[in-house]
Image (cartoon, rainbow, N blue to C red):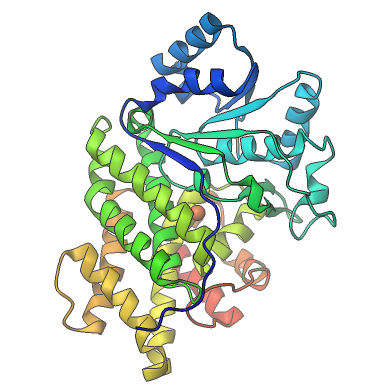
Length: 394
Ligand SMILES: [Fe+2]
């Protein structure tokens, strides 16, 4: 076996387990006098866990502020949060919520130290390089999806014809602590469980077949894919199934680690372009494009023959893993993968892009704006157009 060179960068301190959220006040007390709590608008703030956290912070004398993230974070929203808290002597940020909330918390923790417009530091948008200093940051995911609790970037988007979805990125931006308690996702609405779960699935699959994957990322991706197979549909059907919720939290965490080290392919490249163009949840874009994206990749790999056999074999191996079948034939394994993605999309009631107003006239522009990075096979702009057109048929 030839093991390629690779660098495995830092990870957060991971606290994982049912009921671990109750440790949070004590963790905050050890680190801070004045904490900024970043949350979403509704789901979590209606739970008894939120009430208990606030009671405990008040009882132990921790001063706290909060800031609500009501949508996918934009640069303007991050600037607003920074300005609102610039003089509050914040010494710790805790973000409790879905991927958007944690990305926002990550960006606020990085920008409170600079107090400058975040857009100047966004990849591909601004021309300044962030020095990497930030406030201590704890990520507490309440949905299982983006894996941003384990990554070094925060995705921010500005939606519109000239919009963008770009990252604020630095090795130091990996959260200091990722606290994962599957009980927190019990209050996650059904469609968000579906969308976020398909995002984690797409991240594990795309990082597994990425040309930058390594034996280490492969091992984590396979473990995460097994957890998705065993947990996603159950978590969707049974909100309160803690074992399934734990499986999804574990899979999402691993997807964040593998994507940070191996990168992502065409499905996530398209999700970045579309995310800057119109308001569609990230998980929906990834989940609904995963089938056409994988179908295109597999067709192209087949056309390349022997040269692409190892990559085709990886796709087939995932198909066999998802079906719990031994892999005897690579083409059969690839078929299993595509069939499973299509079955899950139907079961989870994932909408197509057409239901968000996307039309075939949008396709040419979107495809031409989508860069190809870390995809297992080269795609022409026409191939990317065909991925989108295939989705618009559904
Ligand atoms: Fe994603």
